[in-house]
Length: 572
Ligand SMILES: [Zn+2]
Image (tube, rainbow, N blue to C red):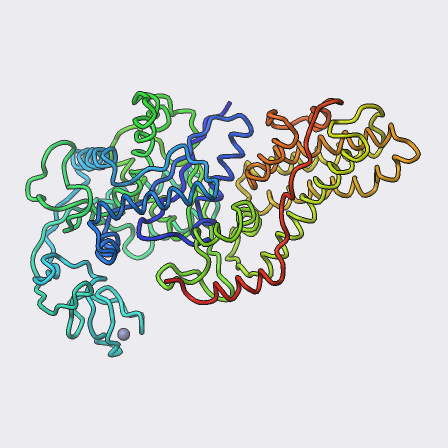
């Protein structure tokens, strides 16, 4: 039995995510976790909400709530939606947890001990009206280059010129609009990533099996221009993890917090401790996943994320771990995704464009979305959601192929043999050929799943469903029954066993339908059907079942058009 640690990039707290976010990390991570559990491996699947930083403060202010209260509420909302999509996290944590506070402070202390943190005095814009320092992007003004009046302190969105806040003409606070700004000195901590460049370089070089896309992004950050830069890890904010050196105060850093990019990935680890604490387990139980000196030596650690997150996961977080000098587990495999576009444009959280996770569940059960999203995952390039394609894929793959197969075989059996697996007859040439084809396809499916090739896995699964349909079509037990009921009984017995075979194989993609099928078959045997011949005789003659309700309803043209209109604008 293998031990596999899986993390999904953690979603930011300020709002509900869209389907593009879902397919970029959480959903494929769940597919992989479910598959690995299905194979009998020990899995720890972790995700959390990313709760610190200015955007959380601003969203809370907009909602008229204290930021801690806002985050607690939004965490519950996101957890509920994750459940709705059947995301099977072992724990869904919070980066604002006490566990993450302690661990982030611990890492900072270790990095300081190793001489990898330096103090830098910076000049930063302070807003007297807001009573706070303003991050660059929360200062607005007129662009000195093109005259655009809403340029941000870090960049003009109109002409794309990179800016310093002091470049802006008529600068004002993006929070309050106040122009009562001044430049003040403030001290910050920097992580000396540049000092770790060679160590990180050697570590990346040791990852010969990583996709070129991943290593090339990391190498670019390591070597382009002046190479990997030191990075500020603190902020002048109220909301966040107070800057401390382990459990001790950090003189001169009072009132400051760690920068969200520093504490967010540490939550991957802290989340495991949250899991242990929430389940009354000992520290040893989570440390055996994360500490190579405490049992994690044989753990395989896989991360899922969108491509924009690759630099943080290949450089910044490893710099924190390696720099600590402690034996924490580093990532072994990293699966990154391109972007999913929406109907001729981009999904956009800020513009409310596309279908959001809560809306999706209001119109259809999770399996419909899971199947479409995973079978169209943006792996080698960006992909696009269109309602036509969604309708076609659901109706064809789920309703016509899988759903129809289940309905035909169970209903035919009920009408001719009753609601139990029929007895009599034996497998012939057709059945032997089917078992051979399914065995070949199953091996391919396993390989693709193991390699986290999401689309290829979906294609193979679909081909496995199709093979059963084609068998049923050509075996035609409804014709055979008239001449040779024994032969028809053998065919139907095989068909009913195929349903269980499908339920087990399809569970990672469509867990709800899979559970429905297992229930209809009155079976709890969800062991992996490695031996196809054996699996197809697992339900013995006489085993009772019930005809399940319609597994997947077809999407009508009317529904499609209705949704197309409803989701063409922006949400509130
Ligand atoms: Zn400009």
